[in-house]
Length: 183
Figure 1 (cartoon, helix red, strand yellow):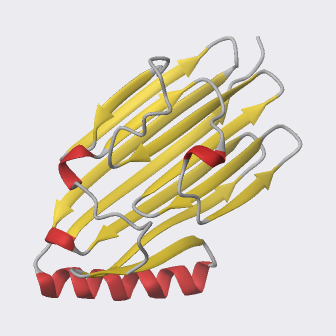
Figure 2 (figure 1 turned 135 degrees about the vertical axis):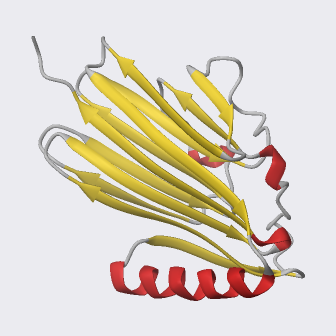
């Protein structure tokens, strides 16, 4: 096992929303990808058991960080944050930046057989879609974090999946970043 890959604490998962960008050197970044249109840019980062989505236009920037612990780099400037346990929905409008953020978060703990089946399905999906992903092994078994992005002219849809073998933990997020009309 890679010594830098930690065992996650599934009860500590949280979604943190910021109105600024974060710096990659503060995280165990394994891969990233940028999606651009004429109106916006989305940068997706993948880390073991977590992800960051930064949505930026000429009017502002919004970042979603889903992480399994207090990263120690955020300070107290989060716009919003919530624990991911169970099912959660959140929406936030950024009037000055002319952006809307919406997310839906679901967590569940699967039996060993269901976890193995879900892992196979996620690996097949990752292969077929070419999405951003990182896989790693722990003593508990195989783990994967992945982000699948669909970018459009005025909005971006992102689905993230984190499968953690310890406890058969699965976290799914569906996030929408949308540019609002000027008016």
